[in-house]
Image 1 (spheres, rainbow, N blue to C red):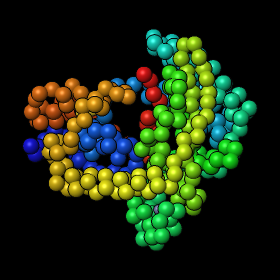
Image 2 (tube, helix red, strand yellow):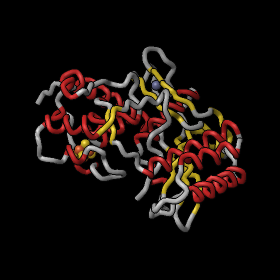
Image 3 (cartoon, rainbow, N blue to C red):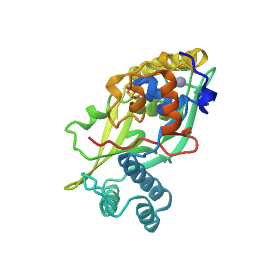
Length: 307
Ligand code: SF4
Ligand SMILES: [Zn+2]
């Protein structure tokens, strides 16, 4: 059912450049992407897991840019509470220990940084030189790339992950990632040749363990070409939906498998309630705040897993 969005003080917009935060969310749950990215709303509470991942990510970024230990320790004390009742033992001291451990790890097993972290938009259209096709990918896609690095003989985008559990097979865990395929596509266009894949630097941080590790996550050319085709189709579908159904949530499909994982969707109380669309838009107005994420200005939003 169409709704007069203005009546609820809500507006519908598409981001100027599609990134993983948008199309990745859309692939997970169309309705969530609609609420979050088209209506530009988010829950009032920020999850501690997201804050934890974002702070660790900021530390690595500031360290790479400045090598200023005091500045890094200040980031920790300003952003992470001294004591929490976090069941994984994540508090200020643990973050300091984890960061020092990461410094040691980087020192013992260094990587060469080819590009520093930056927002990147690739418009592979028209006669843009393309590592994947004789013409172009016919795709505009962006995101905030961590560094592009050389590690041993491997060159690729680096991605940081913080987690509380040790997966036995981290490569398999990160392999089906829409985000890393996109990073690999962007890095390949920046370097002018196919990167073999992404490199994940993972920190396991919990009560009993602090363990840094690094894993290559390879993607071959065919997988990237397939990602491009899929991404193009998703962009077209989103634009079409936006043109016809920007004020009708029912066309943005729900995926109930996404409601609780990997971190809970902020819209469950409205979305899963058997109520009218009017109720839901009112709930969104009253229980969420406006927030339009722009990768060109902000840090990446989801860099941490907790299970
Ligand atoms: S509650 Fe579930 S179905 Fe609804 S928007 Fe969130 S993830 Fe999608
Ligand atoms: Zn291309």
